[in-house]
Length: 340
Ligand code: NAD
Ligand code: TYD
Image (cartoon, helix red, strand yellow):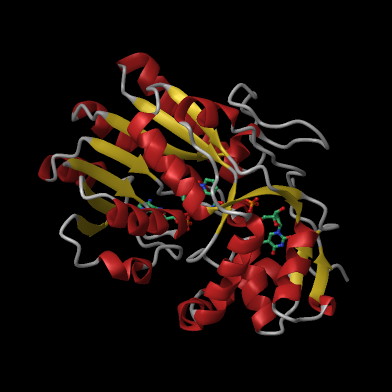
């Protein structure tokens, strides 16, 4: 049995990971440590609440006393660190909590991992640490780190600490750098779920700038299968890029969502651009494909339809979210963005 500390397991990718992994393996015991920030939601984990291989702890990864206690109590030998402040727009409004959770929190986990001699520390990172691409080229693992937003800078700093712990102390670390995820359970501040639920409510769809920024989209299950593979078979000290070669300009995604929901393009509203908006992300995932045999399995056309259907069929999930502090966030974020 592998005793694994999974952090941030109540968020979008982490909860999809736990739901998936507990169904497919019985050799993992998962301790899910999550602070339950605005983005953490225990409803995402209803199906594994009673699983004997799972336990939930509400707490902060920056709390070293708690983290050390959990390592000792659960004999933790493996760590998968999903916990983070994850939204670029929020990092532009205020960077401090990004530094605290993403950098200091990761460092607390690294120190405990060193002390308790973990066998594997997997850091869930992002392609955003590489910065922005022009019209051509792809991010490889050799692309220099050059983050632009407070979010990506904090993730890059965390990656550097992970690498330093490998280099200095021989901690068996691995890092995954994945492109933009989509799928069920994603908090509706991110592009795809925000546009789906706005369209469902006949609200305007706020597209930043000219809508021609490009992201490289991957279905969350494909990402999580890569996480499982790197966790099991990745080489210590290495970085693995994860992406599904699916570059799409934002405006096309928005139109596709409207078309799928039978809504008019008149709902689109071009608004003031995000400051420092990265133009294009695109991942070269040759390394994980050649070395570990990973391949994305889901086609965008069907997985995005499935995702849209999930939000259509789970209105109570997102209605609860948008009735709370989300309203305040939405007003602050978008009321100042109108172009005139
Ligand atoms: P999310 O915002 O949906 O979830 C983050 C989770 O971390 C939440 O449950 C939150 O409560 C928890 N958390 C935040 N601060 C914490 C703290 N101090 N202590 C304990 N728990 C805390 O994020 P996500 O989209 O699921 O992203 C998960 C990870 O994947 C992040 O590290 C992110 O950088 C990375 N990533 C995300 C994407 C993407 O497209 N969403 C792409 C690549 C990488
Ligand atoms: P987002 O989901 O915030 O992910 P990231 O910034 O980490 O890539 O945004 C994806 C793209 O969508 C990005 O180019 C910004 C754009 N965007 C909008 O045009 N309008 C919005 O309301 C949001 C949230 C994002």
